[in-house]
View (cartoon, rainbow, N blue to C red):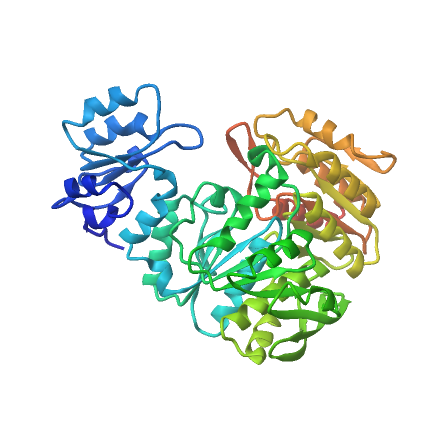
Length: 513
């Protein structure tokens, strides 16, 4: 997409003082940029306090490269010195609370792309990626071309461009929405992280529907408390112009959220419960299961909706995936799908990379790769495996370094509850000593009789697959779709799925016992 040339006064009016708007008249800018390494002549350089550093520290370099305007906010030790050095070369404009206005400014620059699409935001601790991708699959199935922004990448369902973040920065959010809209999308589904909400990355996105999956302790290293984490998630449901909320009523926080937001949006509540009478005051419409029957490769469902009752199979394992499917079904009905078309598309969905991804070979253990990295997520996938398989469960997992330490012993308790054998190993250690992380996980076991600690993740997978018997299940939890392991600041190639297939193949050749 070509860059837009936009009048600066139009871009900033309403975001800065009126007197400053007058200074902008007659000036046009070619692009919005926050990274001084990417600036070009005629750009607007945006400088505010980031997570680690302040953009003004890079403003002099940006001006040297030809930017036309510096839009800034915040305080730092050398602020006046920096501004004095560049204000005689370019226009410097102060914008109060700039970080939280960038998204709206960028939306205006890109001609408000989210207004031209049915824009769906999905938030919650677990299930965001699955719900978003199932939705995109279903919407694409009926030739309405659906874009996706999330953990696995941004773009279209069969052409995703990885970013390394669930929710990218505000400028890239708007540019991606514009690209998707220009490519003909009628719908877009966006995973919305708590970080993204807290930092204003989705400000300026005109969501039509917001979906909530569930709440569990996560990212407390960033948010500090569970209340702060919950408050960040809640912001999605107060997006200006939001018309509908799709909320999991089986979740305690979900019920409180539904009750709170029902006075300003239409609430669709979904539940695994057959009788939702107890929830009658929490939602305007209900989508809930009348029957759930697991079978080897999926679940048979009977579901009651405002548009009637339907019976169908989904090729997914576990009650948590049934819950995800009900979230998708609700959102499709909100998006004016007929019940027949919604059910038909749901019956044809396929699992998402690294989310209960099953690797099977005849007469060998079943391997399940899943992204579960929270207590709740691990519990959900383990209980699902128990519902669908009768053999022993081997659970291989670790916890990420430089992340919430409080969940480490809690995940151990879950593994101990569900698994017959547990191997605790390294996840992404980042800047922590892997042994220290493992020790904190091990502290959560009441007994270590069936637990082994193996620092090297490859070796841990080897031990599990080589010792499990045909009919057993080896769960590799925590990394899912990831194709690298983060050690310090270095990304080392490592894919649980590739390693699992390698060791399954070695068994076949008789190399392993």
